Length: 241
Ligand SMILES: Nc1ncnc2c1ncn2[C@@H]1O[C@H](COP(=O)(O)OP(=O)(O)OP(=O)(O)O)[C@@H](O)[C@H]1O
Ligand SMILES: [Mg+2]
Image (cartoon, rainbow, N blue to C red; front, top):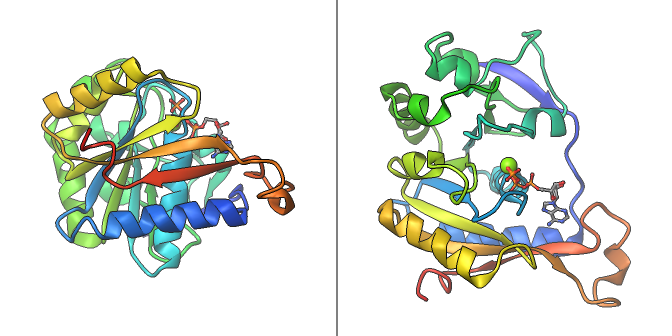
């Protein structure tokens, strides 16, 4: 398998670590029939990519094998943000190469420096992401993920912005809705929930991200990257509303 080094992984604060552990535990208690999980949100920028990658790190640390697939082929930022550098390739091959028939499966799955943590990056932006996601190639990738990993985490576009997430939903066992505090209002969140229900996917729960920690309480962790924010995971509360 090809290898890649993610040179820019943020350090977790204590609060973030705890939140991720809670999220990880909640996901694990969803049962062993929940393996392929998509992460979406109602509006952009709520933290889907951050939560997906960091949960994958947390799962990998706990000994699970995990494949992250970045399906946001409209605006992929993960490769740049993680400063990914492939060991064998000059140019990293991604999902859009594979879905358009230019590359095969073994060429797009990269093993990172973390144990059992593999990544498929989005690849170059394409004009027709929804169309190519709907092809058999994507189905084959998910089948590969199911067979070879404990978890497949799929980073999606916001469900309110494009129907890509609804197409991806067909292949998943559950969805997690990421909400940033103060970013989407109640109506937007309920709309996103409705769209996921229409897509026929089980909503596993919601992550309330970018929560401002109360001053003093997490004071000593303010110095790190996630200092002033931490994610919270609310079991199935959201799904049951
Ligand atoms: N818990 C957090 N604390 C602090 N900053 C965060 C947190 N989560 C995300 N961010 C920051 O918010 C920005 C948006 O995050 P991210 O790219 O993960 O969101 P996204 O939902 O994937 O966005 P998009 O809709 O563009 O794909 C990034 O700059 C990221 O570093
Ligand atoms: Mg993203």
